Image 1 (cartoon, one colour):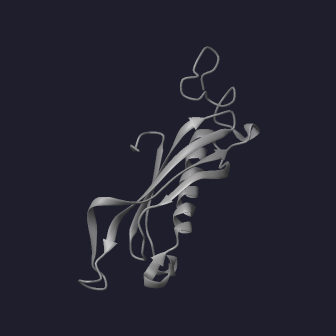
Image 2 (tube, helix red, strand yellow):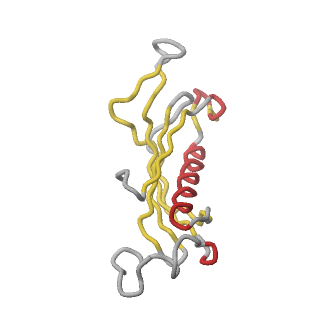
Length: 149
């Protein structure tokens, strides 16, 4: 996933309040909430409306996150239908605490660690699509006369 014009990226530090399990482990639902925020921004940029998250069709938790980690959540719209918007998401750990050195030490990771991947579908009802004329933009490969955004 590249950070192009149709990509949204959020970055934040996970706090002690985000820790849900022993060992300061953060619940995977926290990452899905970040993906929801990314999806909302993507819909606002495309349609001028927050839309609704209909469903995830795949979620893979690939590595743990802990309180003190900095996580980056990124998403992009990969297909646009009449009202549906298919999206792909990835979350990466980019900074980790170094409690072995001190209680406030942290380190920028040389390579971000992918902690979660997901894909899903959001919906913006046609009457709420206020930024586009003539309805939804065509899905890739469906462009044609009178079918553009």
